[in-house]
Amino acid sequence: MRKPSFILDPRLDADTRLAASLALCDVRLMNDARFPWLVLVPRRTGLVEIADLPADEQTLLWQEVNCASAALRAVAPCDKLNLGALGNIVRQLHVHVVARCEGDAAWPGPVWGHGSAQPYAEADLTARLVALRQALAPTAG
Amino acid sequence: MRKPSFILDPRLDADTRLAASLALCDVRLMNDARFPWLVLVPRRTGLVEIADLPADEQTLLWQEVNCASAALRAVAPCDKLNLGALGNIVRQLHVHVVARCEGDAAWPGPVWGHGSAQPYAEADLTARLVALRQALAPTAG
Image (cartoon, rainbow over all chains, first blue to last red; front, side, top):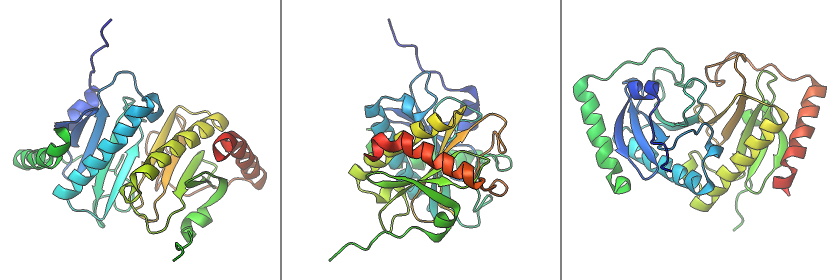
């Protein structure tokens, strides 16, 4: 029997744009110009908690989070990375990597649930996605 | 030359109580009765980001996060685990594991920065620490 194919949660789909596909995860850029913000989504069905992934894929997930963090920092220098796996609203397993700068719109609080997203201008969104793809290219292979 | 000995950040020290010492991390209970909430602190000096840990210790960190998550769930059944590594206020590397229930004080938002901690009654704090120590005993060895 074939594995059911992966379907991205519609809310994640609406809020983000694909930057790159790594071995396990899609790396997606949150369309919110207030914060440089990636969401990593393992292309697996039925996962809610990190522990739902087999151990070898958990290791891969954290490696990909590291690569995505480095890529994000390269295109958007920051004072602190914020990592989160919440899933209170969207249950499909996803990990947030956010580049935080002192004095940004939510500093020093968390970005989740803070105000409303401010979509990028189209040209800025494209430029950021291109830069991220380039920074992730060695990982995306 | 001896390694400088580990000193816990004074704010983490004030806000939490030690539940157990694992191979890498101290597992500490946040003294906030609103949310069953653990903080894992690797006993290493000078770390800010996850990527500051050597790869083998990152693997160990995530294994200990898994064990702590399972222990927390065992003593405080929940609807969703929230995992976070923020460090915007306290820079010493630490990972949050929070047991969230639908309708809790911050649901569905994040717990970080939400209102003020509500300390446990002393007997409840002791009981929770004892239960956590028991649940973590196989890991603490």
